[in-house]
Image (cartoon, rainbow, N blue to C red; front, side, top):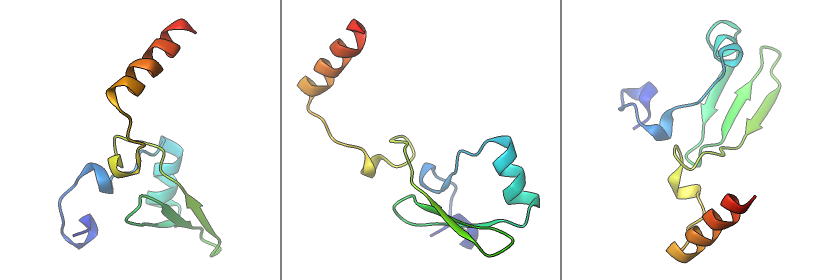
Length: 82
């Protein structure tokens, strides 16, 4: 159940907004709708619509690529060398 309909606050229904965007949402007459896949559709006061795509595996773990332990070790090693 979505938070707006009385559901719980969870990582899946949070949005990490900077101060500017939070203020626009709260006081700037912008509206937003979060889709189940994490995409947020923003609607401006003039009616224009903008879509954003989630990039956080923490908030949307189902969207993250799954790796084997060996792939994770290899990636860490590559990162440590650079």
